[in-house]
Image (cartoon, rainbow, N blue to C red; front, top):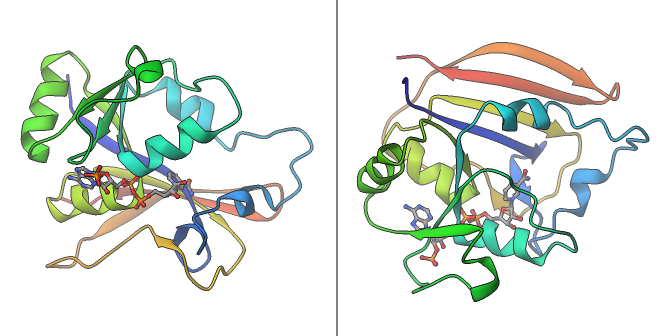
Length: 179
Ligand SMILES: NC(=O)c1ccc[n+]([C@@H]2O[C@H](COP(=O)([O-])OP(=O)(O)OC[C@H]3O[C@@H](n4cnc5c(N)ncnc54)[C@H](OP(=O)(O)O)[C@@H]3O)[C@@H](O)[C@H]2O)c1
């Protein structure tokens, strides 16, 4: 089975995934009366498991709702020894090099992975381990916050293979790594 690492994320116009306070309320700043999921459900159907950074995991744990995933979740952390007990049946703590972590996840039979969290995506990009990115752009400039992208040693080319406009206001582009 072909192995793919995919990103599905929303950013501000200035490329942030959270605002200066770490908030993500602005993601819902465009009225969405019919709760259009902008492709999230279809994307989730196509993946086998999620790999997310500890900060994104803690954000999800803080949501006032039930655990939102029905696929295995692997949480990257070098600071945690274990996940909080109420999440131990929902997510797995992983650490080590990305190659070791990916080997471990692939050996469990999961090939199509959803990579989530800014620092996490940046560390995957540093090792050229991202194959596809769907980026939904919320038309707001936050003026600071958590960036999606960081510095890389070399340029990295992608091809835009699909563009959609949601709610008449929100552009979504799907980029595939040019190899
Ligand atoms: N706009 C969106 O669609 C969207 C989507 C996802 C998240 N978010 C927001 O983005 C913020 C989280 O992103 P973030 O960039 O702060 O962090 P992140 O990628 O979620 O988490 C970073 C943490 O993951 C752990 N980690 C372990 N190994 C790592 C590795 N190889 N590479 C990277 N991280 C590794 C580290 O935790 P330890 O310190 O424990 O070692 C690190 O501090 C939150 O505010 C969240 O709400 C927004």
